[in-house]
Length: 572
Image 1 (cartoon, rainbow, N blue to C red):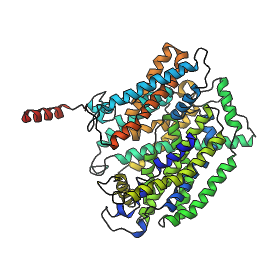
Image 2: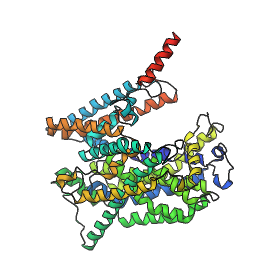
Image 3: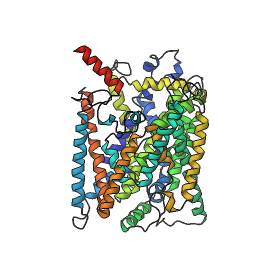
Image 4: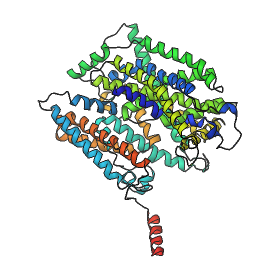
């Protein structure tokens, strides 16, 4: 029941009710300059919104099914959130005696959960203003802070770092150094030559170069999956891969617990023909239905979207599995520009440009959540069929419940929905529609060398992935994982530093007491994640009631300090 409710709530979070659904309405369209085409307006209503959510979300469920063995068994990816939930559940069923008993695991969970939650409260007390608090702590100096190189005391990602292996934290730190430390400063020197100063800076380089690396690694892994699958099918090899070699753990003897989990996970398989058949059926229905809902969207554009969505879903799930971070914003920005350029200035093109990111967002979010649920099921010996059925039911329920809630609030506050300074201003909706309008001008709006650099990094990612697979285990850990390497290109370096701090804690703990560290570090990391996550609820309530923290801790440069001193002197 808990999992089913979580699947329904996923649509409330990612359904686009504060972004593209409102951006399609006439309320937002009239706020922007320029004439408004009637075909570029689609006011929210229950029928088309529920159908839109149903088709775009259900597709993500089916296409990820053939890849579950790749994520869970072959690669053995960490999935920090799924693993943390599984650790919490398993701790209640662990033996109460032995060297590392369940009671000690529960004690670690309780202790560090409390520490993490109290630390979040303590941080909030000093965040009463702009750029205030520990999340803006210039650990390595103000110059490094401007480049996003700082430690922000985010306990959740410290916990994730404790649960992730060396290759992941190393790859992410290397990507942060190259992007924020080398590439972006160099591109900034080309301001006024490569890109206009007033046109959003070098943001397009961040989006497309980072995405190119992820897509390159995704293409390589997808081809590898298909080739290995064809070879196994030709040789009639249906044996489970035990032991397994993967880029994180290598080829080691399989522990008994892992062997039991693998056999249970593989025994309860969902036939691939069901997954592929379901996806194809949904794609065919979507090709017919979506052009009727959005007249500016052509059938071949919908077909293209469903052809590339499995690759994009693979990349999204892969990044989440490795780092617990989301690249949905990057995918949406890219989809808006690419499909907006394709739609052009035709009638209804703005509406079509807003619809495509919505379809893609639902697809990748549901697919990513599905793989994380499979990881949870794998660690807790749960049935994959039951997990899939739970998510399917939850998605169906969410497709009808989410629009109902949205329309309830919209009808209750008719004068305060989507307008500036209203209770539900939905400022992202105006920004999204304006971006879609700009995107219809074509790829010519991209700054100089953006596409060529993106193409270069795309092929570089494929070569690095190939190099990793061809290297001996001794040297493989020194070759970065491209999918993880690309994350700081868009999110900045600070989360990478948080994860590195977490890994260093685990590293020194392991040197002191290997058995204890390996047994308890996952539970400590899980507790840090849960404690920080729980603080989200009271902090949201405080924000809704406009309650501001009592203190502000902020670090100023010499020039800013001098200005403050001058103001204080003149005031006295």
